Amino acid sequence: MATLAEVFAAINNKPNLSEERRELLRQTARISLGIDPPQGLSRLRGAKPLTEPVEIQGTNSENESYIDTLYKAAEPGFKYGGKLAGAAYPFQQADRNLGESLEEYVDPMTVGQGYTSNIRHGTGTGLLRDKLMEDVSFLTEAGREYNPDDPSFLTKAAGNIGATGATIVEELGDLGRYARSEYEGLGSFLDPDYYRKVFTQPYEDVMANLQGILYSGYGNTPQQKYQNLINLYAQNQGIFTPALNKVIERAEPGQVVTQQNVADIVQAAGQLPEQQAIAQQQAQTQQNIINQINQANQNNQNNQGGGSGGGGNVSGPAGMSGPSSSPKPRGPNLVNRAQGGIVSINDMIGRM
Image (cartoon, rainbow, N blue to C red; front, top):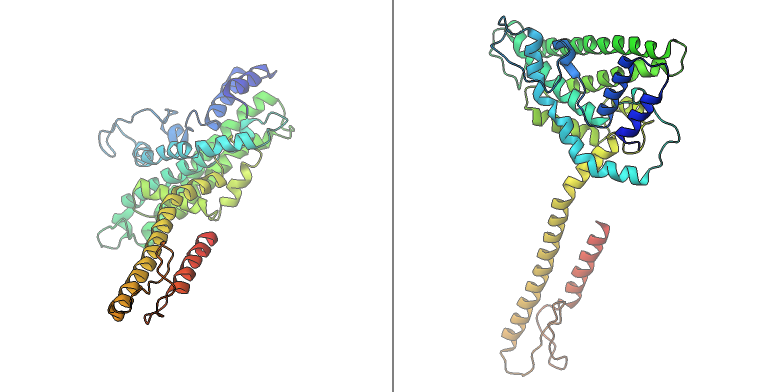
C-alpha cells in the first residue's frame, strides 16, 4: 500500500492540476488513509472542520441555527469511526502483508472510504434522526408523552424522512463540489474516471447514512447504535451492505477497513470467553468422572467390610488402581464408563 508521502508525491507530479484540485486530492488521501475524519455535516455549518468545538447558547437562539443543533446531536457518533479504525488496525496490517499490491496507482477519489466512514456516518445519522423525532414529537405523538424508545409510527416516519432529506442535501453538495474540481483537473467530461471520481464517495455516504437510519435503532445511546451496526456488518447483512462492499473492492489490501475486517474483529472479541467456557466445562466433566470413581471405590470397600483382604479398587483415568486378584467387586464397574467419558470429551474438543 502506498504511504501518504508517496500519494502526495504522485499528486504533485500530476500535470494540469489546479492547486485547489491538488489540495482536494491531498485531503481525500488523508481521509482514505484514516489520518483525517471526513467533513460530514461540517459543510452545512459553513465548512467548519469536524473537530471544531460547537458553542451552543440554547436551541433556536440567535447564536445557533437549527443546522447547528442537528450537528451537535450527531457529533457523538462521529468518534466511532476512529474506534473501529483502532480495532481494525492489526487486521489491516495482515491484509497489507498478505495481499498483492495493485500495479497501478488508484486515485482515492475513485474508491470508497470503507467501514470506518460507514460506521461514522451511520451512527451520526441515527442520532440526527432521533433528534428530529424528538423535535416533531409534539405534533406526531397524538397527545401522549414522547418515549424515545417507543416512538409512534408518525414520529418514526417524520424522523426518517427528515434524516434522509438531510443526507441528500449533504451529498448533493459534495457531488457538485467534486464535479467542479474534477472538471477543472481534467478539462473534459469524457474521461472514463471522471464520473467515478464524482459519484463514488457521495454514493457510499448515502448508503451508509441509510443503513444508520434503518438499523441503528431508535432512542438508544451512541454506543448501542455503533454496536448494532457493527453486528449488522459483521454478519454481512443490511440491504445496502453489498453496495458498500462493491465500492471498496478496488482498494489496495489494507487501504480501508473492509466488511471482513469487521467480522474478524467481532469474532476475535468473542473467542476468549468461548474458549474459557469450553475449558471450564472440560475440567468440570473430568472432575465429575473422578468423583464417581472415588465414590464407587468407597462403596466397594464398605460392602466387603474389609474381611476378605484385597481392595477391589476400580481403575480409572486419574491413575487410581487396585489389585486385580481380589474378589470381583459388587459395586458398579465404571472403568469403561470413565474411559468412554474421556473419549467423549476428547471427541467434543476435537469437534469444537
